[in-house]
Length: 113
Image (cartoon, rainbow, N blue to C red; front, side, top):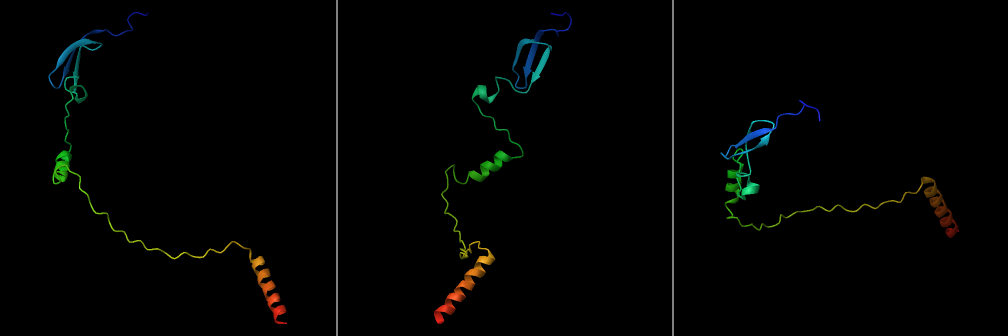
C-alpha cells in the first residue's frame, strides 16, 4: 500500500440528540447524530408521532367522533340514463346497395306483369 494517502483512523465520540453517547472508531474525531439505536422506533418498539402542521390532531378530531369504529354508510343512489341503442348499418358499398335496389325494382315489375 502507498503511504500517506489513507486518512487517520482514530477513536470517535458519537453523541445523539437524545443524550446517548458512545465511542467507536472513524476518520473524524467527533460525530453528532439526530437519532441513534437508543431512540429509534425500530429498535425501541415505541412509536413517535411527528406532527407536521397539526395533521395528527386533525386526524384525531376527524375520527374521534366514531370512537374508532367503522361506520356503515348507505350506498349512494345512482340514476343512470340508458340511451336507446342505434341500429348499426353494415358497411356496404353504395354500388352494391344501388344494384340491389335496382334488382328489387326489376323483380317487382316482373311480378306485376
